[in-house]
Length: 230
Image (tube, rainbow, N blue to C red; front, top):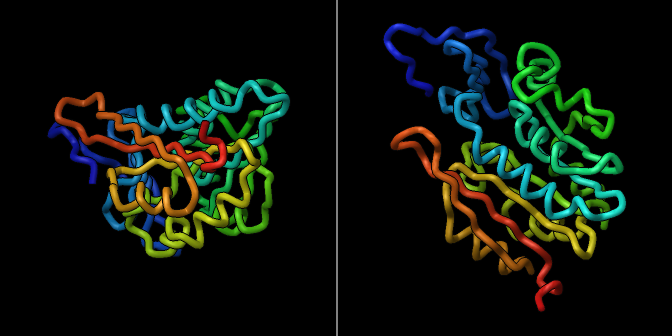
């Protein structure tokens, strides 16, 4: 949970029930945090790696005539905003978010944090499980960007199938032949790198340390279908 300074208490703005536990939106000074059962998922005070996730994905496909991206997990909107800022006007970005309250918060109190990505005309919001969206797509996306839970070793068993061989095979099928999969995680995982490779991806791992002194290091996996190897 976010640790407040003594002179600035945390203010709990809303608490809602979700399929994975109790979700809490709180504010500390001018910063907002979303947590599940007391475990912080994201904070406006530290979003460097989320920005990088969206930026890298956007840059990798922005030279295509009309790139199509799927972003799994809206969060505080930073990943979507970074991707949108890197993409051309012809891009189409679908954002899958399963928690209606997260959507509502982004349309209201959280919207200014990332300059209202849901208002961008290139964006289509899908209020559904990203795993189900991926299952219904074949060769549709130039990039799939996953900022779901806390990564492959996250807190929700309901998201685990995304990161197993079956889920990864479904993701591979949903990508175009030159597509890229980008995944954010709060933790590095050699096991998951191996899982990606076994599923038919070539993998690059990037680690980003928090800009806070002594802050955590977050991980981004970039994975492309192996047939693209030179």
